[in-house]
Amino acid sequence: MTRDADSPTVPVANRPAPSGDHGPDRLAGAPGRKRPSRRRSGSRLTARRNRSAAVLLAPFGVLFLAVFVIPIGYAVHQSLFRVERSGLGFGAPRTVFAGLDNYTRVLTDSTFLKGVGRVLVFGLVQVPVMLGLALILALLLDSRVARFKRFFRVAYFLPFAIPGVIAAVLWAFLYMPGISPLNDIGRSIGADAGFLSHDVILFSIGNIVTWSWTGYNMLIIYTSLQSVPKELYEAAELDGCSGFRIAWHIKVPLVRPALTLTGVFSIIGTLQLFGEPMVLRPMTAAISSNYTPVMLSYQAAFGLNDYNFAAAVAVVLALATFALSYGFLRLSTRGSR
Image (tube, rainbow, N blue to C red):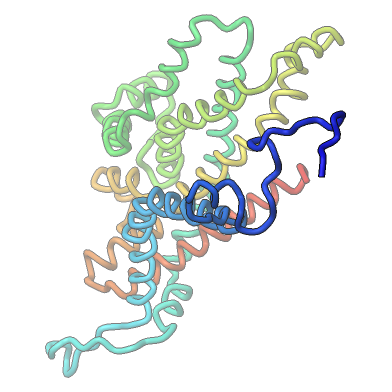
């Protein structure tokens, strides 16, 4: 059988390999290999990524359990028990299950209810004033006419760098009669402020908190203002908007998430009021040992050795803080939705 002269000659090396086990690998003597499926390789990659994520999250998980979940669980467990003593109280102490009795004591305790009412009134006045001042300072620093921005930013933030106890001690000397220059100034103009009196002490504490935390909240709001595109301001100026209208209609709405965040932090800090009244307490009779809910819990635990009642106060206060913070968050985000 002869080959046609017009048909092209195909080299053996370039001819397609026949089907079956006679491919090039078989001709070279190499063992046959099956290419791994895409599904199997994808599952291996996903498992590797999950292991890497677990390793990176492990330190946070351990710390979260150690300083957050376990203490809360222990406090809840302690709040469900009480210590009883036999006889006239001189017998051996015995821990028994109390159920919700400690929570009933907390919710019917007039001292606790007065403390909660006191910190709520404190927050209704102090939080809006503090956030308003923080917003005004942030808007002033973000304005184009502001000069020495770095200096004033550090100056406004500096009170927060001072520990809260030290700040309370400094203001306590400014409030104390006899050595306070503020009292001398007040008497010279015929006004005796009485910063440590029963009627003014809550405002004096609010002044310390406002002085300490306004710069911190200002920095959060100012950072949010820095992320606003400058083209919005230029377009508003071309439309004839003044600086006040730009601040009120553009800047304030755009920093609303930052205001919400600082509001939640302020609510939590208000219900946890402890350091400032604790420092001022030895200087005035207007502050009792149960002045705030946290002070009541502290007094019950370390003054009366009633750890179960103190744990119940802490749990109730945590639930109230969560409810108020969540309600404020929902209320502040309802309009944006």
